[in-house]
Image 1 (tube, rainbow, N blue to C red):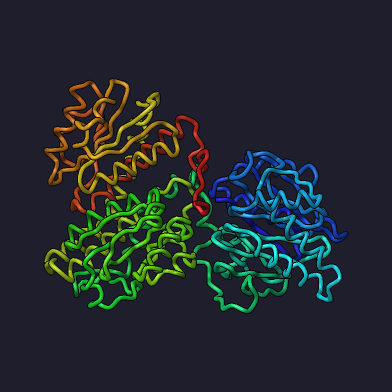
Image 2 (image 1 turned 120 degrees about the vertical axis):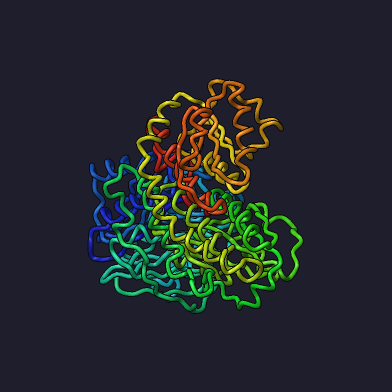
Length: 619
C-alpha cells in the first residue's frame, strides 16, 4: 500500500526522494511527505494531502537542503487524509522523524500512556505513536556509553518490542547526520546499495534508477546504514544471513514510454509477457512443460491427489481459471480459496494436497499469511509470483516466477494472463504425468506457442473496442457473463470495469441468469457475453437470447468466423480460435481494453483509481 524511500549519500536528498515517490504512486496513496536532515542537525519536513504534485509544489516553494532524508506516500488507515496525518512523523523532541507502513494494533493504550507522561500528538495516526516511542527510548539512553548511532538502533529495537502489528519503518535523528535505521515485519522493505550512497525503499521500482543491487529484508530484520556502509541484524539482536540480488528489470521498463497510461502499456505488453512465461519451459521431446522451480520430483508430483489454489482479487480469478484448466488437463481435483478466508478456515486437507499461492507482488498480506498457515500445518506450499526476491517467493517451498516485468497500473492486466498461462503449464505438466496423450501434449504445445501472435491480433482492434465503449458511456452498470473456462474471465472483466470506472459491474456464470440476475436486465444495462465457439456455445447463446428478449443490449466476444453473433448481439468483438482451456487468455484482452477505454472516456484516473492500492500489505 503505502510507499517508502530513504536516502543517505552525497547528493541533495529532496529530488531523489520526490522522484522515488513518483515511482511509488501506483501503490495507492492519499497524502505524501518528506523529511530532510541538513548539516546544522535540523530536520525539515514537508507534508501535503492529495496528489504528489501538491508536495512537489510545496517543496518547490521552500526546498529543504540536506543529503539524508526519508519520504512516504500514505494510504489512510488511522485518521483521515490530512496534512497533519501525512508522514513523516516526529517524536516529542522534534528531532526524530519516522515513516511507517503497516498497522500498530495496540497504539491506543500506548498513546494514552504517553499522553499521561506529557507527550503531545499532532495527528490521529498510529504511526506517530511509534515515533514518540522511539524518541522516548533514545532520550532515556542519554547517559549510555554507546554511540548516538547505537543508541538509536537500540531505541528502535526497544520500541518495536512494545508494539503489536506490522511495520516497515525508516527513521533518522537530527543528532546523527547521515544515518538511517530501518526494520520490517509484514510490510516489505528493500535495501538499495549504491556507490557512495545507500537507499531504503518499500519497492525496488523507487530506486532502480540509482542501483540494481538490492537486499530484500525478511520479517524481523533490522538495518542501519550510512552512505558507505550498512549492517543487517535481527530485531531481537544478532546477525542474519542475507543475499544481494540484481534487480530483474530496467528503469525504462518502469516508465510509460509512448503510452498515455501504464495500464494501456501493460495491456499491450501481453504478447511478450505471455511468451516470457512459457519461454524455456516447453519440452517437445516430452510433449510437456518443465517447471523445475517446483522443487518436486516426478514421483512427488504423481502422488498429488488434490490441489488448492489461493489468491486475492485478480489472482483469485486466475486461480479460478486454473481450477478449470488443471482439472481438464490432469483430472486432479482442484479448488480455489480466497486467501483472506483460507487463513481462518480449518480446511480438511490430507498429506497429498499441494497448495499454490498466487500473487503478483509476492507481498500480499493475506496470501502470505495463508502460505504460512499451510506450511504450519505441514503442507508443501508453492508460489506463483512476479516479483523476484519478494517475501512469498523467498518463504515458499518452491514455485515459478512469471517474469512479466513491473506492473505499475493498479488494475492488474498482464499479471492475470501470465498467471493463467502458468496454470496452463502446470495443467499440461500434471496431465502428461497421468492421462494426457503424447499427441494431445504436442497439440497443446502448438496452441501455447501461437498465443502471443493471437493476442497481437486482438490488440489491433483497440479502436473498434474504444468505439463500443463510447457507445455505452452513460451506462451506470454492466453485467459480464461466461461459462466454464470463461466464467472466471467474466469475473475478472467485471472487476476491471468497477476498479477503474467506478460503475457497478458484476460477473456471473451465464446459466445463473435465471436464478436471480435476470431481474437486473433493462434497456439501459449492457451485458457483455464471453461466448466463444466452444463446448457450451449453444447453452451460452440461449442465455444471451434471454437478455435480448428483455431488450437488454449485448456486447458479444466470440470466435472469428462466427457470424451468427452479428444477427443477435448489438456489438461483436472477435478473438482468434483457440483450445477452449486457453481461451481465457484471449477473451480477457477485449475486456481489459473495454474497461480502459470506458474509464478514460469518463475521465477517471485509470492508473491510480480511488481508494485502491496496488499491493495490499495491511489486513
